[in-house]
Length: 488
Ligand code: NAD
Image 1: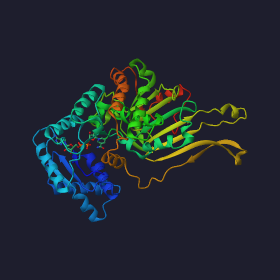
Image 2: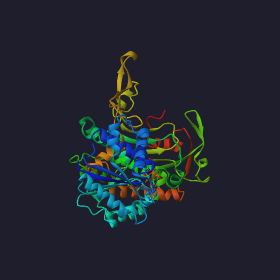
Image 3: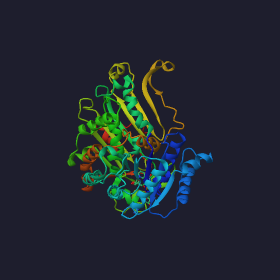
Image 4: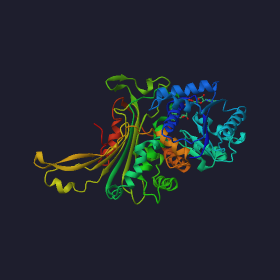
């Protein structure tokens, strides 16, 4: 791996302390960082290097999956870090940042490879990218890369504007847009599951699959994020990015080679075939909901409109379910259902592939009721894969019953999403980062839904906290003769 400088904007923030420092530390323990590696934290607070290093240490002690037991490891790790105080909106400061970067490059013999990580509010993304260019930080003899967090835009237009500005300073292949769902081990495993197993690859099409269901449910409410969430809703917070990324990963066809270019090409083809929704059709295919008061794990919780920071008349969606169609020869006629919500009964991200029940009639004649085969991919918080098949039960006169074959991998000590993604970015592998054309096509697909929500063209269903979401979500599948699996 190339030696490099890692400049972290927003280094005193929540994401840095909960995810980024622990990820770098765990990579060091696994010897997955370069021999010469310099990290420069940038922030608005005035801190000395020693104070910053102690902030980093505290973050490891609190948030790292492996705690720093061995002090020599820890000291070696903290020595990598320096701090630069600057206001990202002002030109002053970028010059001292450049000098600090160059000084460390000289000390450590780093050939001007520079990674810039923007762990700051999205309003700063374009400002920082442009100032990196203007200040000379971006003029390197080595390579430069930019890692950006979500959200990338608030709608189609703002995403396009942002991209135009950022691409004045960085080429597309230098930009690593993080969608941390793409860092989840089971999402990364989808590709192997589909393509490394001929039994599944042969079935991965409309001849055998009846429908696909992608669920991301949370038990938490809006927490302290009302300021952001009340303007975003589940549609921007989850659907435009994470849900559509999981859809692309599930529906893509076998790439020519397992390279970033070919995998992203296949994902792009999925988005190009995704049937656009007209604003007037949104009501037929999309359900929006908002949680009311209820109970989560026997504890009473307040409704969304009572949450601090939320307006009492808020029409923000905390739940979205939708039916999508991919108009290509592989998926024609197979509905893909997505749903995501806050304050649901269970925290669970999973994908269910329901196979067509072609033998149903054969067994019904014998008074048997074989249920459909299901492939269930558990993504979070549990990771695993199970296949539900039909089998005769010899203890019940050979009656047909569903049996589950569980092939969950051992997930003890599995790296976290940020570790996997950061490692990929360090070695320049963009497979599990989001290309601009995926961002743009996702916003294009979502845009009519945003407009229909804003114009209230569809009802906002209230659902009790601790439930499976609105009844309308169940009906959406019932219309097609299906049901959500795994709801108890
Ligand atoms: P935060 O508010 O905790 O931290 C923001 C950081 O930016 C701080 O270090 C602050 O000092 C710095 N900052 C703010 N204004 C500045 C200025 N003018 N000059 C210099 N520095 C300035 O935010 P966060 O939760 O760490 O989120 C950072 C980014 O990551 C956001 O884009 C957010 O949407 C995204 N994100 C966060 C999480 C998370 O778990 N926290 C998850 C996914 C995505």
